[in-house]
Amino acid sequence: MARIEIPRFEFVARFARNRGALVGAVLIFLVALTAVLAPVLFPTDPLRIVGAPELWPGEDPDFPLGTDSLGRDILSMIVHGARATLLIGLCASAVATLIGVTIGAIAGYFGGWVDEIVMRTAELFQTIPNLIFVLTIVVILGSTLANIVIAIGIVSWTSIARMTRAEFLALRDREFVQACRAMGMGNGGIILGEILPNALPPVIVLSSLVVAGAILFESAVSFLGLGDPNVASWGRLVGDGRQLIRSSWYICAIPGVAIMVTVLCLNLIGDGLNDALNPKLRDR
Amino acid sequence: MAAVAAGSRGRAALRLLRRRLIQAVPLMLGVVVINFCLIQLAPGSFLDLMTAENQVSDPATIELLRKTYGLDDPVWLQLVKYIWALMQFDFGFSYRQNMPVIQAISVHLPATLLLMVSSITLALAVGVAAGVVASVKVRTVWDSLVSIAAMFFFAAPSFWLGIMLIVLFSVKLGWLPVGGMATIGGVGGGVAGVLDILHHLILPTLALGLFYAAIYARVMRSSMLEVAQLDFVRTARAKGLSRNRVTVSHVLRNALLPVVTILGVQMGTVLAGSVVIESVFSWPGIGSLLFDSVSSRNYPVVLGIMVLGSLVVIAANIAVDLVYMWLDPRIEIR
Image 1 (cartoon, each protein chain N blue to C red):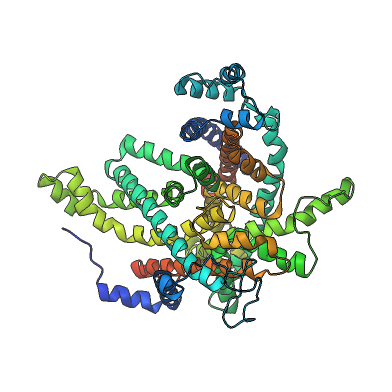
Image 2: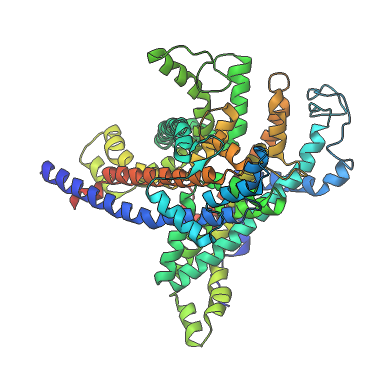
């Protein structure tokens, strides 16, 4: 298989030279770790009432981030919420990447009227107000985790499709592809085995940004009370705390900070990957 | 010379307008078909809910209602009928508001449009200014400040930012209203009324607009730096024009082009984002109508909001294209 190689060590070194990206990667790793270890760190149900209601952060050493209106431990809810939020973000981004790469690859490889139809469809999906579309899908099909993930995937694929298409357009007439064609390789083999591996790096960068976008989408859906009722994601925690902003605004503030930090780190990682893949664009 | 250029520009703009209007037709058709199919997937029709709410149990009446709403027809015929009605601006009837759908939506649409326009204006003003400052003072404290602020506002969920703004400016400081579009009880019409609305508009605009300001600041910064390296800028400097003059009349105009492009792509997102912000600030736009309609399965209204929303996006996109054309100096020659 022909590959346009970037030496791996150089890539890591270039990524690590970007301090923001490094900090982002470390923080995301920590968030992911707490998400994975949530059942070990806080084995009891996070939605159980454990203390006095509306304890401010630091007021009681047992609850470092305080308690909510019912007396539930906010730290425990944040840690368990990380699971839901990250999982939905990753899965939705995976759905979007799968749809986007498939569609973009077909459009870029075959060109012509196929390309025309695909690009018009992408335009169509950019015209429909995305979050309104997500809300409608979720309400119509039901507020389950799977439906939310699919709905976010359906509105997030267009940028990935455009990127994949552009890569395929640039690669499809290169010598190594022509060589494969001359050897009698089928379209499927060329697309999957030859062009796709070379087209993937920029697409991966973009899908890290799609994860960030998906987390924001999910948090908005949950905030509006349309999330899966069995899942306490960060967005829902913000929504739950909304009634108490006069007395205890920290209930709202803390999960929001968690969302912001996570999205911020994902964006930093995306920037870092971008710089590392396109060294020429650095130091602008 | 200038008149000739202006004339050819006007004609080019008309050509562009015509082409974009023709392209909008299949786009609108696609929006209608996708959303119509989506609603067909829904379990249970709005008729079930409507009859339950109004406690209609007489089978004959239900049958009559089914006929009136055309639910007995095959799906494709319903779709054709719907499209045919849309072409005459008939969006159907909303039983909840007891008025035509288009009327129910047009009551709420202006508030949403106002929020969209004010947020985009804020985003452009703040974003472009911040991007220009960062690029002129590149690698200074100013540049870093802009980058850091942009990073934060790009990551903060808008609804959360809105709540935090309420906590700070309404609850703690008491400067601005918590929500709504006008003071309850009213302050009268005229100038006082307009000022009252503007007063209510500040926080929602910040909550929605700062996210986009962050994007524009980043794009503007890198686009300014890129354009500043191009040959024509060096030529202008070599001709002896001052640095500020070159920045304003040569770099800025060209650097704005990517910002305008992104603005066009994001129109749909801005509209959708305003729906969330409306819920935070009890802003009387289409957001509240959407939630009510979605939860009561009032699908004619949901479809109507999608179609009209997409129409707004298409119209805004055409406007953005015209602005792009007006800004882009390369088009002048044709």
